[in-house]
Length: 566
Image (tube, rainbow, N blue to C red; front, top):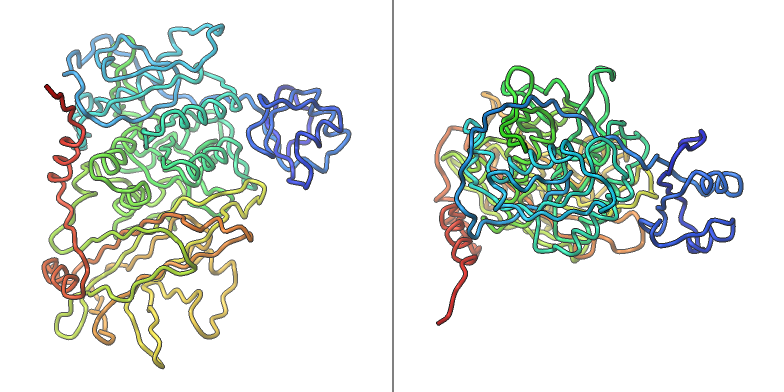
């Protein structure tokens, strides 16, 4: 909590009581109106109101942050000669939402963008206010044309761009109110790019109001935010924590690397609440010596910053959701799984996240010949969701596979719970099925025994460290080495997957919660055993749908065609 005098408006979170917040504050002389309220415990107060609250009921204040935030700067070098001046008209391409500074509609790709200003008409917009938003949207629409070396194979995207802030400083409260309104009125848009972030580092002890509201919106609506990891400025210490709203747990938070796959010079670090891995992943955002090309209101520009790595990830996750038909949980899991690969980085780095996302979309949607990948999705309608009947090929009475599983879900969260922020825990067990005393158990590849029958003592701290308890991303993975030996076969050789739900509170917040799991098996000797796996699945009654990228893309295009009847 900030204990000093407040010099401007602040966003305050008070402890939840049995008395309505509005009635409680009215009793001490603070007149509450809906325009000041974010939710039932988070409000915006003026300096004199904050003083009144501190004098009369300081014990009610849980957290306080100043409302006025300063946007993290980007490095920009303007060019006079635009590289790209022509683009075909849009057809049935999917739409990505962008929430940023204003968009300059006279650029060459202007017909691909629907622009909506959310800034008060009495506020003067300066020419420089158009730069950042226009640059970010140029990557989403036509990034591969402007940067051929980063061609991701995703094509072009239409954008619905909402201008919510001028360049420089912005009001967090105003933006949060605008974002909720924007999402509620545009529920057909599933992917939202947010490249605005605060210079000030997050607090290690609580989630920022901005991130908490974004997490709440994502749990209420079937959407996902892709958020820039924010940038360090020169006069700050060598290592600095990420800024709000990059502490959003449900969002995909993106940091930058240079073209040599090293953390960018301006990168900032996690974790969030001293536990949660943030950022999630990294991508190319330009850096000293090799900047990112974008379109500015004046032509081509050279830039660097996490603001320009996030749009590339927005493109990829939009392709997975719109073109491939995956859920947001599966799309997020696929990105993290592809970034981590067999050399995950989340345990050693809070700057790169789980790893660097591959450039081409095919490297996410397709697998090498010696790998088997399958996805499973569902909802948590009971304490445990499970299957003990996943047939893994057997060769010479062994199962010669390295295994990896990535679980993602977007839980309800509560800022009032402090470090216990997530309300629901989903625990995953994946591995060989072993029968003992007439009971089947899963010998998980990460030796997880939480919830298993018998006495399995495990401290909360160990469960968090070893099995990421309460984290909404779980990554179980073997380590590849030359001396690995094939696995022993138990019983008929089937493997199992178990999803167990645990709640912090009595409310069943996890009931109906959607989850997505991506499983990858790598043959130890490099053999192709995909056909064997498919046949074994069909033999056991599984319905196997092979994901054909080109076929899915054709289906999407056909479904979006306009039909004119005579």
